[in-house]
Length: 455
Image (cartoon, rainbow, N blue to C red):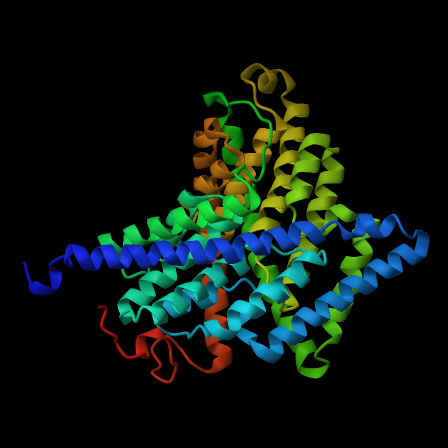
């Protein structure tokens, strides 16, 4: 065995894992407070409806969301432009050493602007900001403890994983996210792997202390019989195509927003804010990140036609809101979009094969749950993360086989249609805008930082 291949002494491993535990705890604090703040303000349209009505209510709601959106865009562009969007591409680029995360400015901007944007009702998820804040917390801890460059990269990945764990109370999905989504960048070793575990544990534990321990999407669905697997495969094929469409719409809308930003910088955010604010009153299910929407439609189960209209509307609002440039992720919008499509598919299947589905115990909600994992797989190209994430969110472990079936079909179809991982495409666009590529030494990233001894 070469000396470089020998494992680090136990005390060095223990030190690294201890720092990873601290990173997870810091992420849990920021993530828990972030979610608590959003939960406290997200119901403001109901409060507003209790004090006014009619066209005044619509106008006031539109004005509030517009103001919050413009505010979030302003502080993001002014103080930390890299804090826009989900932050996952930035983290992946930083782990690879081709991007630099300025944690001192990203952390406060992501926190404040994220609360303003998501709390205002924009169709954005909470997981992106918490992942970015987790990575920022990791870099802060790395500087505090004077970690080496390779250790900083590993801790950056661990902090990002802890951020996902905080967002969904899903520690195992967080570990898989680091391994599957950042497989090309993560400096894999047993010690670094254990650091990801440590950060996910403390991140989830601290978040649960702040916001409570419970599945985020407690949906009611029965087990699926083996005879239903072909139906779930068909659903996966459909969602593979939807995933490719979603990714292309996101990228196209980002191009449109970039043109507006170049000529009239704040008009696009203002227009999107006005639209979403009005929809919060006129059609509330088409707005917000989607967690409450999933629970509502799963219980009420609208008609298939209504669900398909809602799916089209949420596809539009999701890509439009993401293009604005405020902090916010796409995981939650993807899950809510998938729920609409899955429920509609289940209702159609129930109409066509009522006796078959009732005989094997499959309900439309079962299709909705499986659809979340399948659409996630088609857009992010991380099927294992999609399966485990949805299982931890819903606790429906009896649907593992249908999920694997649908994710397999969705992933293959997405690839055959030319689909690529959304975060990889976003990172490429960011590098292209900066005029730098992965092999360009002018890009100052973590790999260019001086090595520091880990005492």
